[in-house]
Length: 360
Image (cartoon, rainbow, N blue to C red; front, side, top):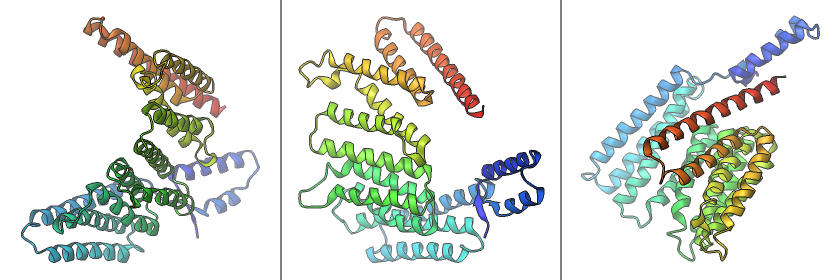
């Protein structure tokens, strides 16, 4: 059985084998034999886009029809209609799986869309007493087995996105004695495990899982009435940890995700109002800003591209804060635009220098 790789990976292998042949380290027949063990799994192409777009349109059409006639249908007929539609879509996907893989995926997507819409519509029809955000939790849980079965990265990422939406409301409606938002304590490890064992360490799913974990921590701290600056500082620390000690298998993803977390929270912590609860709230923001700048200088010396973006954002934040009130608005926007252009030039120049050093 041939190993499927991306087109870029296959091109890289061909170039490397060609280089080894030129150096006399590899025979042409051996190179051909090794290349025959690989095949391109294909990237995003016209057929895949067409089928995905078609699945979206069909799903919207079905949901529009159901929603448009919802009021005049008996409750159990509504339930049966949704279940039958979902089963037909899943069965069609299963039947087409071996010979028409991409068309099969579009059928699975239609089934997942009907399932999600059914959760919302059935809740309204039977007057179920739960928040709309619980529907996102149920939708995410419902498509996880499908994502695992078909090894579909998109469905797993969508499930993570639904869990993030749920996390931002679960604690506000939490009732003592119910498991409530703590479902996520089971789901977050499950998502990480699925990515490691089933999805072959997909970068997008790793990033979504990290963001879900951060959202859970933020909302849990808010639920326990932790002071705002402490909550933001904890997320800042988590971001710094990811950026400075990235996971081995996700080095780039960890660095960028951690940088986004500590960059956003770091700039938030430079605003004095966030430290109002402290006794020395007037001086703490300046102390933190100094530490923040030292951290950015350290990362800039390590050629960190995210650190360049954060530094640009920090400079622009202080430029806006200092100059907006007293500078003529036309001059403010002109200088601000020139600053952004300069930042863009700096980032592009640094990126090219970094790529050149890696090539050497």
